[in-house]
Image (cartoon, rainbow, N blue to C red; front, side, top):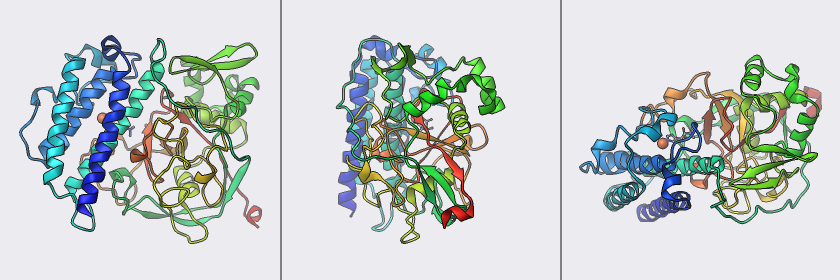
Length: 436
Ligand code: AVJ
Ligand code: FE
């Protein structure tokens, strides 16, 4: 097992680096060091930050090696400087940053050759650190993709269009009430906030069979949804006015309809694609307008993982196999969500589609610790974010790599954020007699 695992980790590290190289190699040095939005770091900060985390965890901590550049730790500590302040820092330039991450990678691969990753059954702490660093680099690749989406200028990224719809998907799915296992104690690369597995009793509910589409969302706009306080929470209504929200981020009027910019290209808004770049408050308002609500995090995970035939929780909606190209729109293979019905092979046993990939889905839940949570390996990954400031998003987007996505994976952000690839689906309570 150990040698196979070593090869797997090396391949995953290489995949992550190839993605980083594409996202940082597609633009010139001026674009790499520029700030494209106060919400985002300059791309060159993400690049060296990825290397610095790899140095801290793999080279110094697991490998016990001497620091490569102790002098830059402070610059690339995400807690020391807010994103908006990062362009003013004396950051490594593009060439220096590339050299730095390459030096760190050589040393990390040398450490990988020499350390024990598992005890024959389970990962040991050093083995887990490699998976954590793979996921960290892939998470920053998604962040860098969001930066590209905010960048103004001629398009530099290319990808095949997403697959077309292959099956009709409409309406909602009833999920029976009862306990299910939420979270995991066995998924080897699951991060601390996904642990431990625990039973949660979820009453029966109904959930949309697919994410809310642009076409559905346009009806909310056309019906005056942005101007009707009935649909918005008090915080949401205040934010809607303060920020001047009238449509999803990147949308503009185009005749009678809408167009949006995608990675530098202006294209029509496709009615059957999941809506993306909406904040939690917009999702919540749409749901209220539709006479529904957002699912809780437990409901989302039950819809995604619960197998009514066995009572077991699966790793993914389609089963325990890792995501393949027919299961889900992940990994920046396509640079947009796919139309609803494009991934019938990825549906859950109850017939819920596109839970994984396409768009992150806002849930109604605050980001909180599961019972029995233990911070690992550092409090700053999850624990410092627990509380009522952040809402949980689930399922990953077209920008998320499979290495950083599973049925248990939890993402979180402020309810006003919409530069991320965020959409949603709705849910509702059901009466006992509806289940028959
Ligand atoms: C899990 C996406 C909220 O980007 O803030 C990256 C991931 N943590 N570096 C983030 C993360 C440290 C994190 N999210
Ligand atoms: Fe980070």
